Length: 156
Image (cartoon, rainbow, N blue to C red; front, side):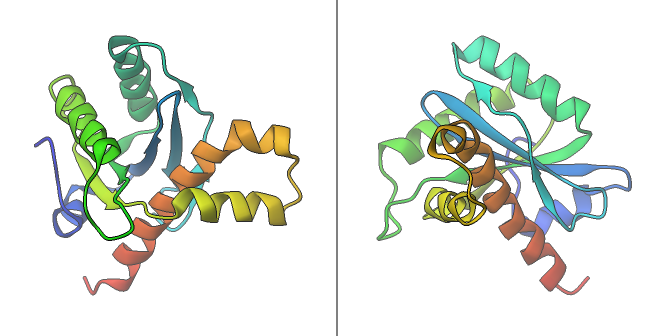
């Protein structure tokens, strides 16, 4: 199962498993991981992108170390909801990495997630220099938190 939906995600969440959030950038991959109760998203260190094979190995190892049952990846839609080149690149990344792991991926609308993450870091008085190193993982946490909130609001 390479790609899953929010409706299918709940069935994949066995006790002791987490969900990962990803913000795919051109230079980095932001990573966040839920707690075991699936209530809160916690940013992790960004993965510096080099080439696809190395990026995939690093990401898959991180997902396994975090006991991720699934990974939610931000889909960068245009403001009108259409898909541009970045959304196509994200879908291609998932198609390629899905061949290397049995961890399912789920797309989640990430419009304005980086803006929200940056505002949050500014409110926490994080310096501009430190924000640059944390913004992608903060955006991944914002994406993941949206999914966790949706899971909690859905009747079981």
